[in-house]
Image (cartoon, rainbow, N blue to C red):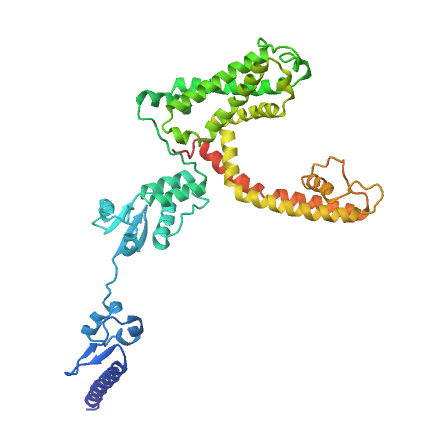
Length: 452
């Protein structure tokens, strides 16, 4: 009897509790600005276009009627499908909504990833590099840029992200960050011009192209050696004697003429066969080719017009043109991997080098001013002005120390010691950055990570 009474009382208390909760809930809904009560006593949504964020605590309750739940986006939102991905034995689970944000990728395209679906295990299986997929998986979850961990080889990482068909701009950003060199190759439409262009630009394409590159390197090397040797005193008057006609049979003149003729031929052929005549003049190598031959023709025209060597030797502008011939050394960058890596390293480190120069300039100004006032009035002082101290500061900071300018007083020596230590620390700043960029470019240029 007690048990029956206890059970009945429990049922009554439960029924009463539900009725009380429903009354309280209805009262809350009536007072809410999101709901209203119809003439029949039904609860209706009062503002269809209202901000539903305020109703989350009110309508998203277990006791909410289904009609109201369907009206609330938070309540009616269906849970996204979860996709199970197995990569070399390790399972990854991700929402389909995250994959749908990248429809052009292998995993984001349902038709593409369906080829790897295992119906028996209800998962997508990929027998690929698992550590790289962890990075790809994080990219699908959070987005952003790809960052390769040090324990994953860069060629493996690149191969994997290309396999998963990530967005081209994402792969491009990764390649740039890793030091890959991207070259947009364009060929002439004419078959004959295309063969000529390949022979002049890409030595690895044929034996003829290799021979052209070899001749170009030999001519460039001979021209640079000739530029240096002809300044020796024993050869200074062999081809150009004052108040006499120029000696066109001089060996230096003949060799220089042959080298310039080859460079001229090379520049003309490359211009004729290039796919874009306008963009030709914006290429660094093309400007070097043209600049390398101009001084010879200007000097030759001046000598032939006057039939005297004295004008060519005394003219400062023509002497400057002869110095411009030294730009031919940059022609070697086309065929030297080391020089290409060096140029790429400097370009990639331009911001850091700019910061280094700013720090060096500030230190030079500070120590130049300090050493001037420290040495002011000191007998036998070598520093008589702040501009004089500029030379001393830069020589001391670079640890060269010619010894032509130096402090004499005790305070000046203390400042000199501080300047030398600051110079060593300042010079060490860009070294790790340059080394890192050099290693990346060298690894890619030597063939392990090269692509076009």
